Image (cartoon, rainbow, N blue to C red):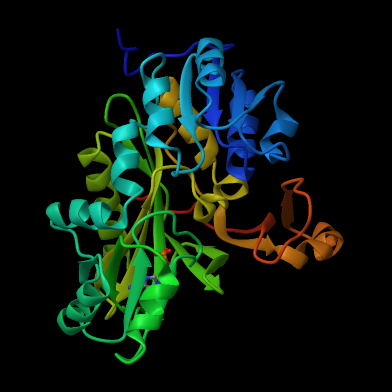
Length: 369
Ligand code: AMP
């Protein structure tokens, strides 16, 4: 017998979260505010989400006995990162509702499947080609042109597992270095801006989109998010429409983020879909009437979503690696709200916390349509 795909929760019920990073931590804090309990499952004993919940399982994702005990203790399962092994999701889905549906993971874990999915909806992406061998890479370079970005199909994040190819000599070294036979080559997009839309979709298919966020990366890692994005209203409406169409096509439940490039002022190309709460939505914790974390909890609980109301123009700054050493300066800065994740060593590139700064609007911020 399989578990029902959705169950409406009552206050006091328990949400199981796969993954124990900062996203899981902020989800658990949002759930607590709504009178819901969380049980975090993570293989990492230093998981920052463990600090904020009473119920935690530290076990491997392939540990069937631990997964069964976890499932028995929770009313619904969700996740805070997209690389949950499909076997883990299947074991849990046989016992409890898993939201968003694990079928979404199968698509978003694979850059090729994800791009095919987006293109089938008639939504633009960079041109791309499937690459499985050095010979295939040479053909793909001829087809796509240079510069181009070679990416592993799976397990890439924050620029890991990708390399910019500028010239067609040295392809063998690049291919050997990538170390996989499952890759895609994407045309390099000379984008003007990177934007993202974070949206929530409820049991009934109702979608609430946040305002479009403009994202600045340093060394491939998100450094700043600014809201609203500096783009025309019409383009922002298109970005939200793209996100809504993707959420509908997945029959999605929960929060997702769609990252896009803006090219030639008017063209939107989808780069990536994150089937979870997203770093570019952290501004909502202090800059909106309801945070992305609370929206996700509401959505998977079958509760009404809140229409977002933004409190003004917002900048979110990530504290990465040694940036954390400046936390006292941030704490002293008027108008800054500091979030620290309680992580151990501040390794280079590690997200240690973030700060939001809200500049209240003189008039109420516009609610997007
Ligand atoms: P990704 O892991 O696909 O999100 O890529 C990380 C970052 O690399 C993006 O946020 C972009 O800044 C850059 N990038 C990825 N793909 C492309 C592309 N096709 N053209 C230009 N820049 C890209």
